[in-house]
Image 1 (cartoon, rainbow, N blue to C red):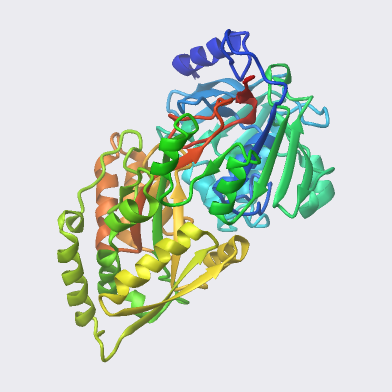
Image 2: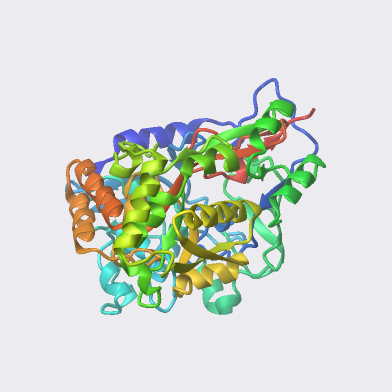
Length: 535
């Protein structure tokens, strides 16, 4: 086995530093108030790490559970349950060494078997995880066969060598494997608790986690309270006592409540950033965030026949005036998107797509031409429905799209639904065009591009053999950049989506709350790293 000296040395250095996880400065006095009130746009659907599929759910799961690694505020890997790892010479066998002091919130030790159970559970068809494909993307041995139902979950390439040694075998090496291990779907769960309570194991009083916080209250996923887990291995160096999450669909109302002191974090409504930055410069920030906002086309058998025609899809994409969206609606530092992968993804060069170099007038002219070629005009208008989940911002963008498309002769009906209903509609292909955003699970282009491979998450049902081949080739390429560029060009030609903008998230955070990441494009945060200072 070859020792991963660079990362292991970094991990040892972090562990050796006897400082608070939150790391307040020597001149900072901690506040008596160590509670954080965090805003959620939508109610939480699940706290199960293997069943969660949304960003806000990950924020909660990251407090209740801890995986092999965490991330620093700059996005670097830092120790979680694993303190170091070894990798075989052929880079297909990873051996993770787990800290013996790690415990569950009920006092039980965290063991390698807990990771084995969770990883097997993720790909087990009986679990019904929408993130099973993620482990397949991680290239874990037998994951594809288990997902297909051809092999038992116990045949997955994971093993508990002993209580504190977790071994993973890959089908073939992938250079970004360790980057993927901060994703919540890879977090351990307590086998005894899951097996005892079944689907009810995530309820207050039953949920047992290994994170820095434990669940004490949950009102229908809309009002959630977490408190310090006294059995967390680094509890002595955790500062924040209570994390309170509350869902408010109306962002204007959420902002009002922030300004009244009821929230300690809020994402700003569209168009509000310039004014608030001027009025509250110490609290208002535009932070980088690896996410792309888009509309998905339903290309499944349940989707409208019109969208099977690539000319129609291109026309709708071309007519989307992205400059109007980012300059007149969102106004928070977002960038127009004419491709899928977030522009600032590590080691990635954004592609130059043909239509990105046209003027909007040229795009509109081409859109009308394509629609006429497809047989649609004022005598045979195209009628479609655009669906979105509840949010004033989503509504504003949907209304704008409705007008952009009306200008090229397309009639669009808007359909709004609450998040849980909307997500089910996406999963069941119950939509024509659906509002969507994808945020990177790790900082590498494949986290975006694998979404559209056949068998990926892929809520629009897109499938293209050339695209699949590009993504397959990228797994073993010494430099996958060329494959990534070809995959992006296929998306531009087949247009399974309308990319609209790349995120920059305008937020407000009180000046006394420290430790939220500002440089990590994934925006993964941990309550154990936060602290409040006295005013």
